[in-house]
Amino acid sequence: MRHEYPILLDVSKRLIVIVGGGSVAVRKARGLLEAGATRLRAVAPEFDAAMPAEIERIAAAYESRQLDGAGLVFAATNVPAVNEQVALDAHARGILVGRADWVDDEATNRPGTSGDFVTPARLSRGALQIFVAAGSSALSAAVRDRLADRLDPNWIALADAMTELRPMILRSGMTPPRRRLALRELAGTDAMDTVARSGRDGLRRWLLERFTELNNIPGNDHD
Image (tube, rainbow, N blue to C red; front, side, top):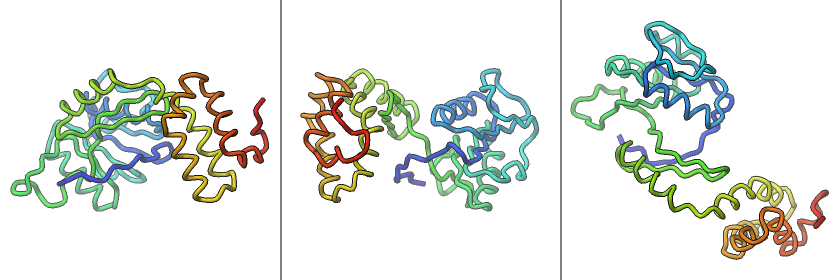
């Protein structure tokens, strides 16, 4: 099964069920917490001591009813038959499921037991998020780590600034072409040089000077 379409999913409110209690389940739980998840349930007979305390734990063998109400499911046990059943049950409910042990081999896999997605290696620096998928988790992690050594800190500063400036542009009443131009210029070399020289406040002033219609929004002045 090919996993081709990347999305950034809001996990802050949906119930997410992780079936498994070992090291793989722990990594999934930690990554979800870092992404803002607040409703996490783990199901397993036993749990690794490193499982985050914030996770709701059901200390029991897997049963399909434990997926009730879930918006996302991870099959992360070390027993392929259990992971297969989790995938089947999730699909029957119309829930997306990720399966940690999935191998793309249509000749041997039971229909309906595949995962719907994979989780790439993640590099997070402020508002800058970089995700790498490279055919295996080990290679993805290696590429991510090499990229981390090459990050320009001004990219991070620009990404952090965009959390304020992009909403300001979108609510400004600017025409669509002007909005697109403003967002393109914020991704350009002039913006990069400005944030390197003058920081986030300087970038904001630079933007307001170039796109004066933004000054019509209450609070957008140069002081």
